[in-house]
Length: 333
Ligand SMILES: [Zn+2]
Ligand SMILES: [Zn+2]
Image (cartoon, rainbow, N blue to C red; front, side):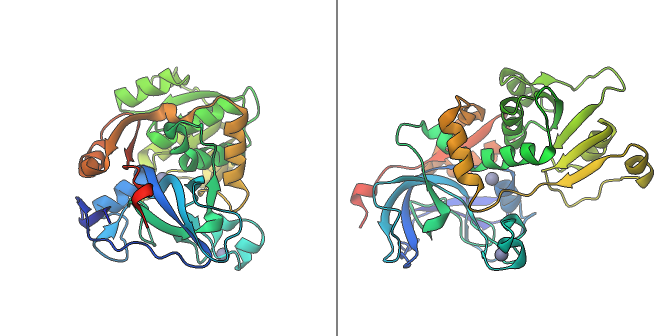
C-alpha cells in the first residue's frame, strides 16, 4: 500500500511498502480521499517537531470513506464518508473527565505521535471519525479539522458581534480564523508579511492591517504565526482591556513585560486544537447551516505521486495546499 513518508528531515517520499492496516475491534479502516497540509506537518518535515521514528507516515487532516468496521463498532459502516478527528485523547484523565480533552496528558496525535493519515488506507478509532454529507465538496471537507481549530479559537476569544479582530498571520490557519471571525459577526483585519497571503485574505473578506494608522488597537487579537516578533506586535495592538489569543506555536521566546500586561489589563490565552466529542460535530453542523465554504482557503491540489512537491510548495505559497488520493476502495479487501 502507498503512503507518504518522511525518510529524513526535508526528505519526503511516496513509499509503496506499507502493510494494509488491520482493523481493531473499535476501529474503522478509512480509504483516504484527501489530506490537507498545515504548519505542524511542515514542522515535522523540517525536523523542528521530532517524531518517534523514521521513516514516518505524514499527515493528519484527512477525509475519506469507511471500507471496514471493527466488530464492536455499531455506528459507522462501509460506504460512509467521514472526516478524521486526528487527536485521540485518553478520555480517562482529569482534563478529559471535565471535557477539556485538548489538555489530555495522554493525547495521541496522528502524524505527530502516531503514524500519519497520508496513506491509501488507515485504521483509526471509530469514535474519532465523523460522518459528513456525500454532497459536500472535497475542498470543504478537507478543511473541517483546521476550521474546527479556527472556530474554537474565535469562540474562546470572547469576540462579540461587531468587534474588530486582528488576525496575525494569513497562513492557512490565519485565513480560516478570518472566515470564522466573519461567521461570528466580527470584522477581521489581517497583518501578514507575504503579499500573496495578504491578497488572499482580502479576497476572503478581511481588511489589510499591515500599514495601520499608528496606535490602532483591537479588542480581540488572534496570533496564528507563532513567531515571537509577531506575538510582540500582536501584544502592542491589543486594546486596553482586550484579549490576545495565541494559536500559533513557536519555540523561541517572546518578550512580554508584566508592566504592559497589568497596566493595559490584557487577557492572554493559549488556545490548543479542540475538544472531543463536542467540537467536530459542532463544526459539521455549522457548515451544514451556513454557506461558509472553508475550502475557499485552498489554492493548490496535488496528486499522491506529487506529494514531495506539495510539501515544498506548502511552505511558500499563499493559501492552503492539499493532496488528493486515487479512489481505489472498490479494489481494497
Ligand atoms: Zn493541521
Ligand atoms: Zn486524557
